[in-house]
Every structure is written in C-alpha cells, then in structure tokens.
Image (cartoon, rainbow, N blue to C red; front, side):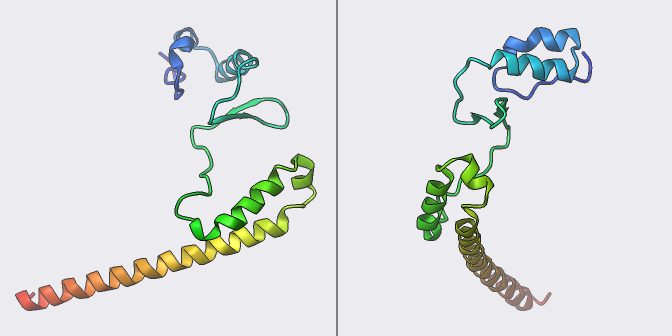
Length: 135
C-alpha cells in the first residue's frame, strides 16, 4: 500500500478500492464529493456556500455547556447568523460577535483565576508537606 493507504473517515469500507489502487488524493477527494452530491448532510457535514460538501474531522466547538453566562448573547449571535450569508458578510453580526468574544474572554479570565488559586494552594500544601518531612 502507498502513502494514501490510511483513510480517516467513518465509512472507509466503501472506498477500499481507492486505497488498493493507489489513487491520488485529488481523485479520492473528487470521488468523495461526487458520491456525496445527493446525500443529505449529517450533524458534522454541511454544504458550504460554493456547494461542496465540508466534512471536518475536527468540527468547530459549539458555544454551549460551560458558557452558560454568555448563553443569551450567543443566542442573539445565532439569530443574527440565521439571517443569511450576506448579512454576515457585510458585517451585520460584528457587534454581537464582539460582545460574545468579550463575554467569553471574561469567563475564561474567571476560570484562569480559579485555576491559578487552586494551583497555588496545591503548591503551598506540597511545600508544607515537604517541610514537615525535612526535604
């Protein structure tokens, strides 16, 4: 097998002949795009504005979960993005995006401060234990 023998896809069994034939990466990508033309996108797949199927093995992290403090601003940003590509392209969502970034930055600063305090307490505890042991 050549350098294209490993395929990092969820359903690589249907493309075994491409790997065995040593087909170029370009032909492999072209085959994948043409094969998926009529398929409906799944949770990790969406069609981009130029019509080609995007399927990233590392999808962008979703703004949910521990960012509960910024949830209302994130909802406003998602509503703004739902207005369409051109609205985003001409900067209609820039102000909201700046607010989301600021909120997430503040949340990250809080988490970093908590982590820093926890680490300092742990270091102090270890130093005290070492001092008690005479090290």
